[in-house]
Image (cartoon, rainbow, N blue to C red; front, top):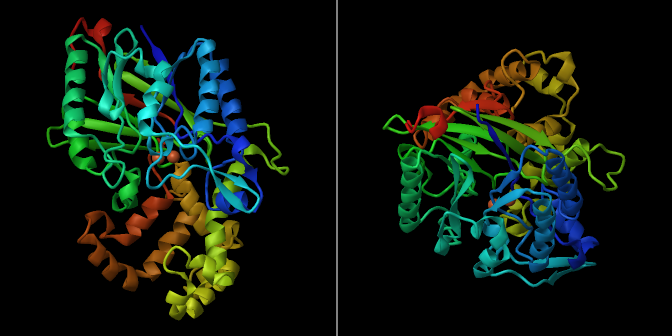
Length: 467
Ligand SMILES: [Fe+2]
Ligand SMILES: [Fe+2]
């Protein structure tokens, strides 16, 4: 029975430290980033060594955001790392994404002392040439305008690498011309009895209901494109960008299901990558995280270090509510514009910093299980956010945390119910806010790391028939 495996490594965001990666300017930047920056080289080296150790798996797919912020030097050094994988026999297929070239949101620089020093950037039209050896040159077909291509990975299996840069501004997605080209690739695969799946950078399906509301969390016209791809016979798409581990399915009106497997960033908590093993009729997905890397981690394990980096971004904001109103309001108009909010925000921030779950329970007349009663509300809120990105959210029915949140929501129902009614008009998922909040903290399916999905089967097994 033929099997075939590959790795998915996304959002490597490599940063060339020679541009400057220390001092106050660097600290300011890195504190507001949940992913590592100066550490990326060390993390990528450790992760790539794991890929090299697996001698059975030669194919590695990269769904984009290869470098930090379009620095030319970062690309050049990252490509050296890719060449080392290639020299060891790996076959690499790269997509580029919006962090890989200069655009409105992406200004390459190094960090030297107090200064952000501009660095040479990369134009979008330079990317194909830079990454020619990593998918583009050996492609079965290319859609050059969008930096998309289709490739044969092994006998009977093809991949459709769909770039979704769109207009590099508000529109993230596929052009009609690109879709027509993709359709032709899918039909060609089918005529040849090959199985074909897709890769793109932005999630095709929001990985969590609340991300439906965030434009940057999915392709702009995701519902239309998801149904189109599903009806064309694409049942599996690998994505990145959100730096989260999630597995989400959608079935079109025509009854065809597509599953979006979004992989977390290689360099941001939990620093994940996936291995996918195809066998006739199924794809088995496993996930791994970077277990260690060569860096002064201040006595922490790699896992603790990644969690510390992630949490710092959120705790800084929550702590600023209590201690630094100017920092807290910097993203929405500054302290002067928001001065009326200063007292209530500071009071809420102070409360959040001291309040334990036990006290929250007392305030709302219920008993919190002793195993979690001493936890600070602030830390629990931060963990809830982190868990959405890490995936396999653990607080399912039967856990003390689920019971506490459930009881709190029931006590707050005079507020939550009318609010849910209002928000539910926008999207029915919010009409029952209690159920919605509970779905955020506990994922009963637990498929974000490991899953076996039924997928199309290829020629050898069905004698030319494809479903
Ligand atoms: Fe991205
Ligand atoms: Fe990214």
